[in-house]
Image (cartoon, rainbow, N blue to C red; front, side, top):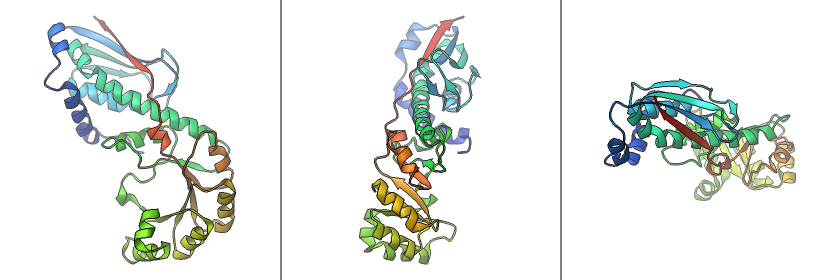
Length: 281
């Protein structure tokens, strides 16, 4: 995943700050004198994987470009309790107004990377790679997919134009796998690959015959997936999907599939436990 650019982050951060501020921060503006200087540190309270530092930094800079920000870790670093991720110095009002939004992004993205990392560790020793999905928070997909990449996953489609995935409902609407793939081959740009979702071995064979480049094995048993690998014999790439957990991902990888996709690395990832420690100069 390429490094996120300021132009990509700005609209996301602006919306988040507008949501948090409303018509103004009564507490900070009335309790803290203008010009008061402070310094703050963002620390981990539990083990996690660092992700989203550039997003948190951009939040502080959007509130006050004069803030001095030091990144103490890099994205992808594994940290323990009390480790310092970032230090901020400058106008106390600015730090306090940016604090919650910056922490919200950072806790969310660190949590996703940490969860992804746990899944990737289970794939150690296998050639199978972990993929993310489009099951992301609306408006935050770019950030969440960057976090899965930090955790060691590969990105699946970022949006619908990134590739073709013929799912169960598309197959029904087109009256079959063969019909759907034929329509795609007639008009699709030749640079795009076609992936077909299948639920049984007959559909796997039909997808191969129709000309699919990738085949998704949706909610199949371990024995069915292993048989699909033998049936395909490397002619197309195979992706296992559906009910992937930390307990079963290694067994699925052992069947020989090329990829395993999981939405849970995003939608079920707990937030990292981080805190901002604040003091006046």
